[in-house]
Length: 479
Image (cartoon, rainbow, N blue to C red; front, side, top):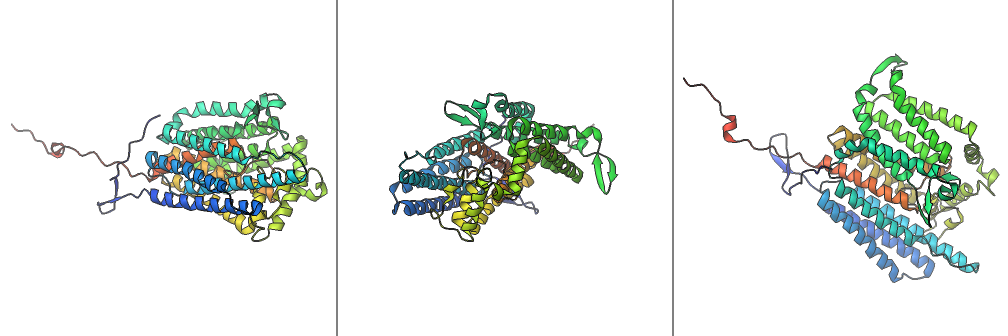
């Protein structure tokens, strides 16, 4: 892929009066925010350790030092490869990731205490595995910044990435259930104790394709055939892309029984289409197709009917299918405004507390205040992602950055909405917070792309090449 021109330390931008001013890189701000995030994570881990063990062990300081080192390396790589990138995104991601590791360790300690009380073997825990996945994710983060020096180069591989993304989506559905099915959803590849969810990486590949395709076809898709009720409706022949995306999302729902990925996939495409064309009619058409698909899915698939029924009347099924959401609601109610404190609640009684329902753990132990603070951190990352979309100069970068930011926002909305009973449960994980390798690693790649686009947007334009003195001289013919 083509390399962007290196930025010199003295690079400046022009003022309106013709003078120049240096463009701040803000790497010192990023480092200070990273240190603040590390301190908060270490304090949280120390509170958990003191609550369960009565003292703060040396493992907390060892963990904190290791956490600081790996994010210090990520910061150094940004200084080297993306010096003008947004200084706030990485510290927010570090704080989310660190709090996720603390909560997973807290749930590990609770499971170990319950096992000892029941005379059962003590489980090994998942926090150590999540630390390994964090290192792998940061390694991919560095690799993306190292390989993708210019985000515009991705557009040349759009159709190749589309084919790879569709293959990733289809592969679990084609495998036997023993290799791909977990909790009724065929979205995994499991071999020899190792599991990966290829749909997380398909999401990124298809997003690059969507951005490149919509930029290329934007003028055609913006054409209107007729005006109805104040809306410029598109031509019938231009409905093909949105219908294909709708059909693919239904196929994911049919063959993989994965409501969350289906909803996320179609939502991303419709929003990117709306951003690319600025036509409200596309957004309304997408919502209409979603409602039609939801009705069809409810009428045809029993597992969708079960999800909706449990969502509407969870307490009627509190001993079986509704047990999970009921326990989550009890936990959120117990947390109240300020929570029970880290280690002071019983979030381990909620099934899948480390993955789908880690938000319920936060709501119980940090309360409504802590949960809102967590959502604010996500909002900061999303806003900075949209800011990168506004500042970058090329249309492909604008659309890709907007899609990446919206993906994070939409996924958090789906997860929190499911845990709080706003919408039916979908099975998605909370970005950077939940236990799971595929989601964590893919989201680190997503952040790397956002930082690459942000660097391109904040980087000052190259200085004009000086022309030789004689280039401006007037010439005349002398007889």
